[in-house]
Amino acid sequence: MLYFIGFGVAVVAPLLWLSQDKQQRPPGPRRFPLLGNVLDISVDDIWLLFSRWGKEYGSLVYIKIFNQPTLIINSHHIAVDLMTRRARVYSDRPWNYVAKELLLGGHFMPFMDYNDRCRRLRRAAQEGFRKATLPRYRKIQQAEATRAASELLQHSANWVEHLSTTAASTIMSSVYGFPPTDDKNPDVQAIKQHTERIARAIFPGTYLVDTFPWLRHLPAWLCSWHRDTHGFYAKDNAVVQRLFHSSETGPAVTFSRAVAEKVDEGLLDDGDAAWLCATLLQTSAALCWFITSMVIHQDVQARAHDELDRVVGRNRLPSFDDKDNLPYLNAIVHEVLRWRPPLPIGVPHCLAVNDVYQGFHVARGTVCIPNIWGMNRDPDVWGTDAEMFRPERQLDEHGNLRSRILNTHDESHTSFGFGNRVCPGKHFAGDTMFITCATILWACKMSASRNVHGDLELPSEYAHTGTPMTLHPTPFPCEFSARFSDALSQVSTERNTE
Ligand code: HEM
Image 1 (cartoon, protein in one colour):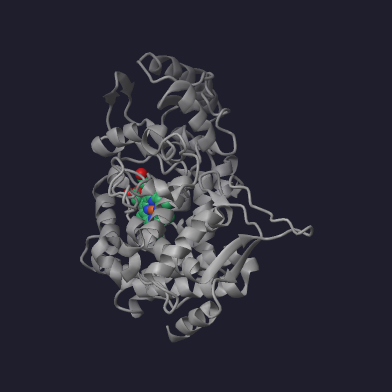
Image 2 (cartoon, rainbow, N blue to C red):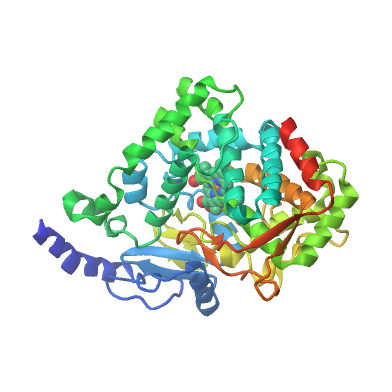
């Protein structure tokens, strides 16, 4: 066995290296034999490195992670050309053994190639969260937004936890029909931890076996990927299955009920369906960036308060019926998602067949990483001040939300991804963002805390935590005060009547 590995590393890998590098490739940083650029990418904030490379080498940057050809896409225009216009070619997912097989038992649609099985699961997700279906979740979203505003006014210190609870509870109620829950709920914790484990495992270069598939034949005791993942799938699968099947006896109109019907009709596999319902919770990061932006940009907050006073008044809470009349608030939501994308390097795509683009050869199996962070500040699309948080950029000269910014499907950012793999939860996430931001702004004035000398301690707009794939602001002390005398009592009354 050791001879086999030695032979692989010493002879086969360099031969592969030499034989594959003769085609015309996009420019990129210098690659080292065997390692490629793996040492370059072992940095924090990889999206900043990709953006720097974009400036140095151009919008398309070619690197290798060990032997894995990888294309980094830094321009919005090229991302649309490849992942949307050539979606037939660019919609698979990279080979991934550790996350996909060991942690998820092969059931997780976001990591499947774009085959029939994936298409059926995507269709189920899209039906469950398409625009026409969204009204069925709005009561839940509104109730959670009211609860968040009430908690923020009464217990400001735990603001990150409240927003995390809101995002988790909204999704648990909409997907499984559960009553409101909180962030400490063991099932919510299990799904969060499992999402974090996956985000760590899929970071490029983390596990050798994801680049050299033959390593999966090694005995388990030799491999860190077996040690790191041991027991998690069985544990997580038990939670996911229990949640999925418990919803059979809950309310009739939930996402998981709709998905379960497709299992009964023989259209979906039971295991795939259960895991589809436990997919991704990124909305809490976006809500936390919303608070950060409001604390830093008091002028924006004041303008949003004016709009709410004009359109909604102070005698009732905002509702979804107000959405079309609150262009500035919608602009804030779009700008938060543009400025701080929760998944700054998206989810990598992969080529199903060879392609040629701008004279460059892009081989089948090449991994494409969309640098969403970089694209959202592409000066050709968002202007030279793209680095700044400025909701006005999302409005036209009449103060209306811009109907379309170049192929962004009316979102004015690329934070929900591309083409056939675009996020199926984007309208649902957008609705959750709208009603939560509107309700918090209606009830609260947000400001930085003062230090012992009485000076305001503004948070850094760059400080962040999260896994190497996700972007979450570093928690900071923040004050939430009632914007007018009976704001809290109105929120509490509304909360108690729900
Ligand atoms: C602000 C919140 C969210 C953001 C920023 C976000 C972003 C993304 C991104 C960037 C992708 C990858 C797209 C691509 O491959 O090009 C994705 C995929 C996905 N998202 Fe979201 N998402 C959010 C919320 C949600 C929610 C609430 C749900 C479910 C209700 C959801 C379900 C999914 C699924 C199932 C996929 C996999 C799609 C596929 O692989 O075909 N997302 N999301």
